[in-house]
Figure 1 (cartoon, rainbow, N blue to C red):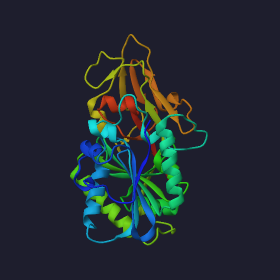
Figure 2: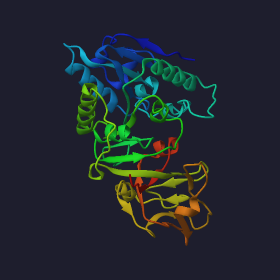
Figure 3: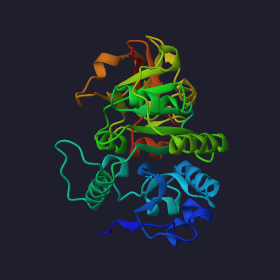
Length: 337
């Protein structure tokens, strides 16, 4: 059992510490509250996944930039999975995914991680955040992009401050940005691959811009300012199905070139995978309602898996551990706004 730590100051050593050594500065999940000129804080979550270190690096850059002056706006920082960060992993095998444990309708859990996220949510609700930013890295070849969970002008403005590419999703449930969207404009930022220096710089510049904002506009944005995509389904590989990007004798074989299709349109009838000739195996594909919709998006014939319609793919990675812990990919369609 662990408890949430809270600080009203920056713990000594935080600015210089690597993610793997952060356990020497703070012993577990923590909320750090720093006072700024404007009271309603910018809320930033980092290290929900221990191997995604861009948030820590960007926050360190931000705080160093204001080291000798008062922050333009108060800042609250949630530091998540310290134990996984120590080992450079997304999460440890015995842990749930921190970014699936946030409160949402119908969710009840006795897991300490779920109770922790509820405590963070309740604390930040009292503090009335100006905006919420959840920072992540990718394991696959994906561009920099932001995610929103509510179709709203303030969310659009907050998202396009990071870039033109924006993804709207409401699944999976239990993610931080969906929970915080109930109390303030909220985004998830995907900042490129781990240790990408340009991704870190981009995240820092975004946080610096956010902390200086007086308000988030509620005006409509021009359609030319945003490419909006809608996540329509999540693709997973069933636990009892083996897969590989190298060994074609596994239950399902994927080409290693598949990763290059992230945020590129994959046309109808495109080859997605090859299945073992002696086994009857299928991918698991669920829609926003959690319903199985494999037959809507994939056709299985002659040991080949092909797309039934043109789609955009995202979050494809060759990292088999991450695939097992999360998903294989997301299926997206362009979304008019």
